[in-house]
Length: 198
Image 1: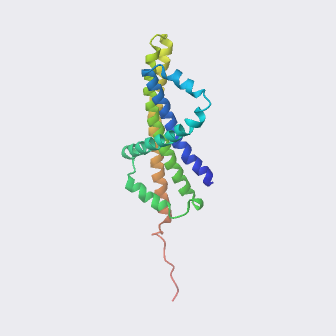
Image 2 (image 1 turned 60 degrees about the vertical axis):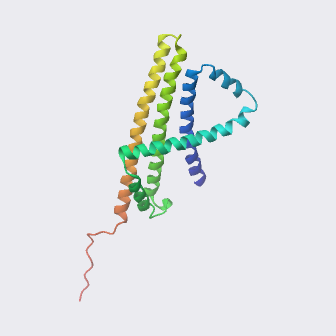
Image 3 (image 1 turned 180 degrees about the horizontal axis):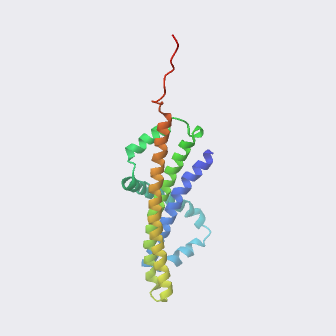
C-alpha cells in the first residue's frame, strides 16, 4: 500500500509536468522550427537516456509540483475551502487512522484528485499556447491542417476549463466528507439520559 501511494504521489506531478513540458516544447518549436530536428538527433544517441532522461524526469516532477501548488491555490480561491478550513477538515478527519476510516481515505483521495486535476488544467493551457505557436510552422500548409491545430488548441482550452471545474467539485466533496466525519464523531445531543428507578 505504501509503495502504491508513493508511486501515485510521484506519478501525478510528473504527468502534469510532462504535459507542461510538451506545451513549452511546442511553443518553442513554433518560434524556432529547427528545435525538433535538433532534439531528435540528440535523442538517437546512446548517452541520451543516461545523461538527459533522469534530469528531465526530475524537472518534470518539480515543474508539476509548482503547477499543482499554484493551481490548488487558485481552486481554493475560486471554490473554497480556505487553507484554514482545509486544515480544520484535515484535523477532523485525522481523528481516526486512514486505514480504519473510509471517510478519511476518500477525503485524502479527493484532495489528491483535486490537486492533479487543477495542475493538469494549467498544463493544458500551456499546451494550447504551444499548439497555437506551432501553427506558425504550418504557414505553408493547407487550410485543413491549420484548422486542425486551432481545433486541437480550442479542445485543450475547453478541457482545461472542465478539469478546473472538476477540481473545484473535488474540493467541495472533500470538505463535505470532513463535515460528515465531524458530525459522526460528535456526541449526540438528542440522546435521552437513562432514568434510574428510586
